[in-house]
Amino acid sequence: MQLLFGKLYTHFNIKVVFLSAIALFELGSLLCGVAPTSKALIVGRAIAGLGSAGVFNGGVIIISRTVPLVRRPIYVGIVGAMYGIASVAGPLMGGAFTDHLSWRWCFYINLPIGSITFAGILIFLKTPEKEHAPMAFRARIMQLDPLGTALFLPGIICLLLALQWGGLTYPWSSGRIIALLVLFAILISIFVVVQIRNPDNATVPPRIISQRSMAFGSWYIFSVSISAAMVVFRSWKCPDSFASCHQPSSLRYTTCRYGFKRSKVLRRFIPVS
Image (tube, rainbow, N blue to C red; front, side, top):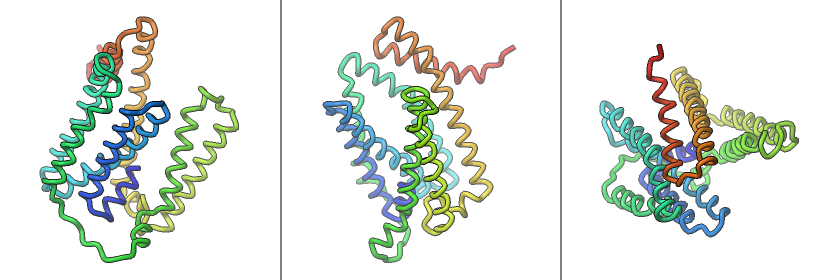
């Protein structure tokens, strides 16, 4: 959804889109907090995830529009540092809430913080907006590349379902898994064709992704993300064994899991004789 929000920020008012993303995230958090069933919780998480995609993109875009070029790396670094702190403190706070209050407070806590953020941005944020030529609503919607989005999202969902179910719920040789992978390949291939044939309104403009700096920068981020994901995956094994044997509290389990993960990361920087 970050690709779609990128188009929204390009063609619509940045402040309005950013506030809408925060509102979606708050709505999703509220639904998760009051969810009576697991299905309602999943729906709430999906809505919150949709909003968080717009919040992350919007934060970087707002920095690019309001901060002088020479100071932008500092602010982008602050945003990255906040993400790192939150990835450690958030699960620990969630474990404490689960033990001493309720798991619902893992979501309720977002409501007052998000409300303050929403009010502050609404009152104080002033972003210079680009001049957009008057056009019909249909033409504005076509600029968002709805066909590309309609191909890309189902394709990624097929891939994620195949990776989630393969080898666990269904064997890799199952017709369901093979069908999902084939659908992923077909949809993404058509998506690439659409992007090439419609370069002006493409979600991923070929003129940008074909630049050497952008192409290799994207490959670098992809490689780093894969490496980080493998560290996270391995960090589940030891804490899960600990939990199954000793049945610790939520806070102790979370501390063990994230402490183990951080030790795996820090060990990369310690020389071994």
